[in-house]
Amino acid sequence: MEKTALTTRRPFMARALGAIAALPLVQACTTAAPRQAAATPGGRFEFGVVGDIPYTRAQEAEYVRVMDDINARDLAFVTHIGDCMFDPRPYERDPSLARMPMTDDNYAYVLGTFQACRHPLVLTPGDNDWSDAVQFKKIKVSPLERLQKLRATFYPREGTGPAQHACGQPGSGGRL
Image (spheres, rainbow, N blue to C red):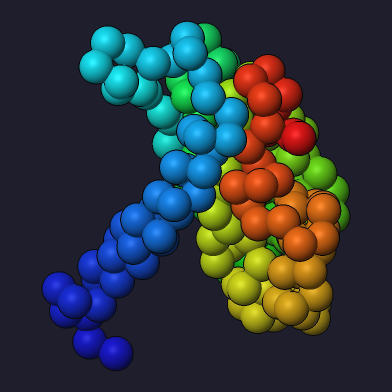
C-alpha cells in the first residue's frame, strides 16, 4: 500500500477521534467525583493525558517519572489513551526489549501503575493492548480472549463502562 498523507495520518486521527469520543466519559468523571482542589477560578480544571507508554523496559523507568510528575500535580483526572504495552512484532524480534505484550502479568503490571495514580484515571485501550494479538507469529494469541481479559482486569464490575469503573474518589488510584 502506497503511503499517502491520508494513510500516514490514520493512526493520529484514530487516536484523536478516540480521545474526542472519551470526552463524555471524562465529563462523567468530573461530575461523579468532583475535586474542589483541582478547580481554578472561573471553573477551569487541569487534567493529565498519557499514552503509548510504557513499551520497553527502558521506557518503564521514564513512565515511573511521568507518573510521579502526574501524582505531584493537582489534576481533576488522568486519561491513558491506550497502548500500555509493546507491539508484538518488535517484541518477537527481540524479547529482551520489553515485557511480553498482552500477558496477564503485563496487564497486572499496568493496572498496578494505574492504582498508584492518586487521581481518577480513565483508560481507553489501544490496539497494542488487545487487538494486535493477531500480529504474534511464534505463538497463537486470541484478540477476543485478550479483550475479555483486558475488560476483566481494568473494568472488573459487570455492567460498568470505563468512566464508572475508572473514576473513583481522589486518592483511590482510580478504583471505586
